[in-house]
Image (cartoon, rainbow, N blue to C red):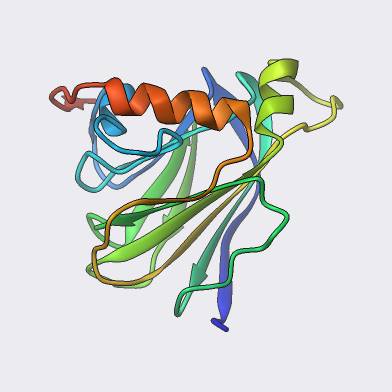
Length: 181
């Protein structure tokens, strides 16, 4: 079992069901970040960028980022689980959703494996928004560990919401990245 370090554990404000893990200012179009992949909830098609989809359209979602020394086991209660390879642009990255930026420092590694775990995506999509004291219908975990590049994999697909986004990604085309302020 790998030792875990918590890099972030809190709430992220999402808008339009997405957030990013980025290390620079060049961001691709949202769908382009997942274009051509089998999974549609964790995009890694653009170098150095991860794009994630949530069930909740607008509001705050519980989100945790863990660093592991080696591959951790998959907890059985996560409903949707996908993995991709990721080559970070450096050790300084940010978890972003429009105006919210959470700076993270990753241990140095040339290649990572990333597991995105979701619980309650369908409930989040049905609720659509959650603010202040509203219940949080969905929650997420992003687990990272050093690993050589490997094909993406859908470990577990339970929600209709994840299934929908997987289908969208398979039909999307890649576009050029654009520079963001």
